[in-house]
Length: 596
Ligand code: 9MR
Image 1 (tube, rainbow, N blue to C red):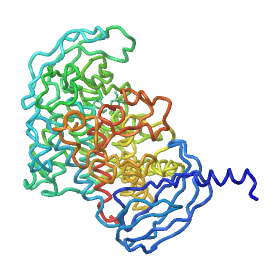
Image 2: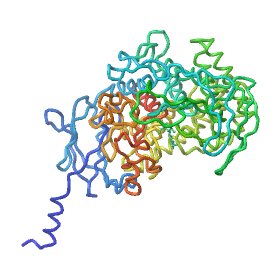
Image 3: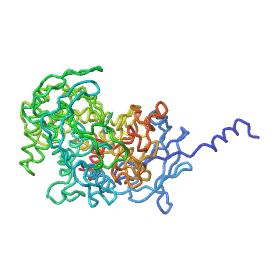
Image 4: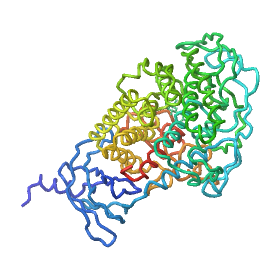
């Protein structure tokens, strides 16, 4: 007779659900690592098999238990079938569960890189989006804001600060919309342009005619064509020489009106051009009837402009010397303007658009000095660089729109011809940072190079920016472990996560479908298209439950589960140029032969 307790145990075992298998839904490169994570309620190792389409077992083994993972709340086990290299279609079977079919083949990341780059074309303001470049009629739309000649915010902001407006309207037509909204922000545009230009410098990816773009066939890299579309806009955001205007200096925290001081703002950059009030969803860009306003210059925006204009100056030096000269002049003037006005923090009280406020611009200064030094070799920029608090600090975070010092480090570490004393110093720092991310990866239940249980707004962008750092470390050392770490970042974003979500539209069996976007909003208006393939969601965020969907889960979700593929979830499911850019970088880098 079986004792009662054993019957109960058997019943529990019989009821226990099969393990949930999580893996990269686009598949695996033949020469890359191949790992799946299974969530189970058992801590004992499990047998697994990989079977081909004929049902033949081509690999088998036992899982490595990974314990309880705080970021997901799951008990995880690792399946490692990296030794399987033969291209084909396979399934993974484990303890009564079977995965969907996945591929092992070369070239997996090429279409992803292409789609991710096309996102930027689709976000272009000022020009009609044409079906032949956008991937079909559904994504075609008339130009949004085709003639953006704007004047500055004038009057009192909600904090009570009185802004004088500006003398003449400025033509700031063009550039990319930032995200699901129609704002165009210099700060975020800066890191996105840098990322595309850096990809060009590191890999030469996307030669002419490799992408679907109006400029394809002009003899210039398509990646540069796309980045230039935004760079030209950023140049237009620069304040004319000789402009005097009152701006708040220093941290003016607290609720009341700020106390602006008259400054020479010539060479600074307006922080943003955006709608005076938030517009509703859905909305085609061409239907936006809100007033469009330029917002006061900030030191951070000025340095963003200076950094990418300096980068552009060296990149276009041979391709288009006149444009390169224009970029260099703008960069130098912007740097000088930031030195003159080092503490004009962005005013954040305005309504109707994102604030991209940043109370520490020492990292932007380091980044800009790095770019200007790389371009000119001028000792003055070298001094600015080596005197910066960031010269000898120990970075532990990925680059982000508000933390840009590492962008300068990547440039100095990877660019040929940099003074060896500087280059070596920065190569040591970038590999040390990449090693930290690998250590995070080794501790993470889902083996992504991101640690802890705090997932920020746009965590997928943060994770992919860690991929960029790992890629830079791979570039300078040739060590395969860094490339493997990039693949771990890609694996997470493409489905190896507790909710089986591919955060990229058009890729995987559960792709992003309902981003927070005014035009790609079929759940609000069935005549509108879904997100084009290659669009990345910001992803899990347990640090700001700012939208109505997220709010319902506050305090109730493990970090990686604080997500819903819902158009209303702007804190979880928006798209943005600074997140899609590292997706382009990582996918394009992984599309190259491993030995490069
Ligand atoms: O990416 C930004 C994130 O770091 C901030 O926490 C958040 C709130 O200020 O804003 C995010 O950026 C948004 C911007 O303000 C407006 N356009 C959409 C951006 C992505 O959600």
